[in-house]
Length: 102
Image (cartoon, rainbow, N blue to C red; front, side):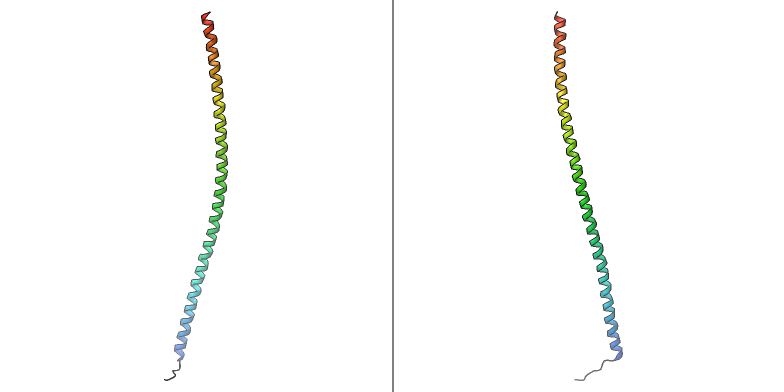
C-alpha cells in the first residue's frame, strides 16, 4: 500500500470542518444554558407564586371560619331574641285577654 501524503488543502478543509463543528456545539450548548437558566428562573418564580397562594388561601380560610362563627353566634342571638319576643307576645295577649273578660 502506498502511504498517501495529505495535501495541504485537505488538512485545511478538515480543520475548517472541525472548527465549524466545534462552533456549532458551542452555540448549541450556549442556547441550552440560556434555556436552562430561564427554566430555573421560571421554576423559582412558580415556587414563590405557589407559596404566596398558599399563604393567601390560609388567610382567607381563617377569615371564612371567623365569619362563619360570627354568623352562627348572630343566628343564635337572633333565635333567643325571637323566643323572648314570642314570650312577651304571649304575655301581652294574656293581659289583654284578662282585661277584655273583666
